[in-house]
Length: 401
Image (cartoon, rainbow, N blue to C red; front, side):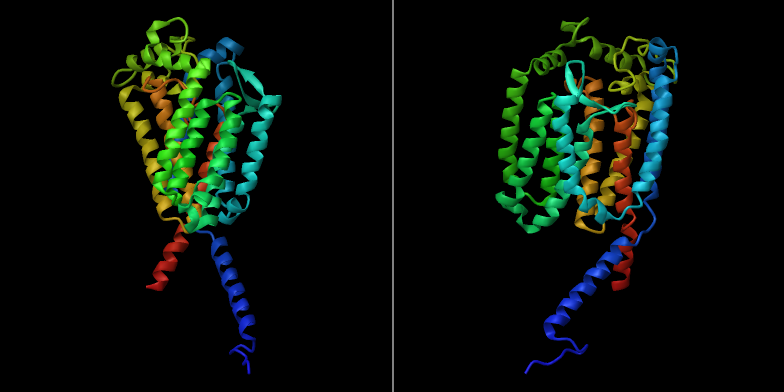
């Protein structure tokens, strides 16, 4: 004869009721919000402030030449910085489960935008990477980077221990990367493809994919990369320019030569803020991809190193937050966003100093671009949102002692 449990429920009903209560408790725990991580917020705001000031210094000559308004680029960047900060703070108040719920939707939306680029995109310098919004343009590839991070984190949490198998730990992620990178190659946007592949690999590695799969995947990526470089004229031209920029000083090598002049002329202490010379229409993209060259010229080696130190502290703090995140999804998302920041900073500085071929990668929080700055601040807002749940984890540990 079956007996009631202590609460007057049948055994199966009791288990189901207990499961509901447990899930309700976990949901309540996830919706309780603690304070955001102040060190991460302060570092972000300091870097953002310095970046906006450098946009003013780097862009006023070109802005005056193009529109007779020397503050044209600065004012737009300042407006995007202020509004982006408000968006970041708003995003920081979202519970983590919201990001997970909309992770796959963000991936589908970004793929749809990438499909639209060849159809309605705006072409510039031989590449069609932008969509015109009327008041500004934006690159869907920037949205895709964040979407890949969120979707990969969600998929890893679903597959869990199955990540060590090829069926679950490699195949679905590989399909996403092939689709996304294939659409980016059509633009063409090789630099964004490299970054997304790197971010995807980092997420998979942290998620538990066996390292032996990376050896095979790396060989495939290397082979495809060599094929693309040899078949895509602009890519092979950039390789040749990287190896010997002075072989065509007035053509393909002009930009990197001017960048090296700018970096070298800064010396130890720099020429002073606003006193740089290369920005007077000598250095192309001086307020965008090559703004770090202006930083080196005006602030010198010491100033440039201090800015890189700020980035390093922000990246280290990001990884610290990932290690202390409340759950696996939060840890994976912060790891992805922090790694994306680190990769972009490294590649931009490497391009400016001719350590790697020119790739068209902007310097986060510094390079001019409103929608890109918005997305970067949204990413910082997501990290801050996840950081709000870290005190709850600590408190729970203390209560169990």
